[in-house]
Image (cartoon, rainbow, N blue to C red; front, side, top):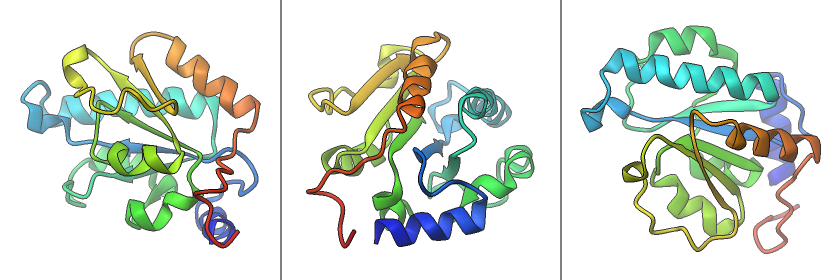
Length: 169
């Protein structure tokens, strides 16, 4: 199943099915009242640019609460890298999941072995419930260490081959 999903994503989105596959989750930061809608979009575009400077084998997924009419600038810039399938249907293909701040996805992705790189502004952006997982990595978004960690994982071609997690390989 993992190989089938990766092959389909590679054909549809122009990525490599044999290299580290990173997903970045676009989050609705405007709901926090810390960002406007435009600030939320621009801020996440700046993060995505840094990720794509490290790897082109990255796909973008929107939080389900974000309607298709929102984030039009981001959607236009990265239209070939956006996936519309639900995260649970794609999770077996993911090696590294990235997001700004904690999302409910960690609750699902951490236990199945996917490396999670969570970027944050302030510690208050994080709930801390999952800090005991060895595959959770937290970095301040404006510092280089999070992006350097990603670069190292990409260079090593990290693949999530957790045998307890990979189904029908």
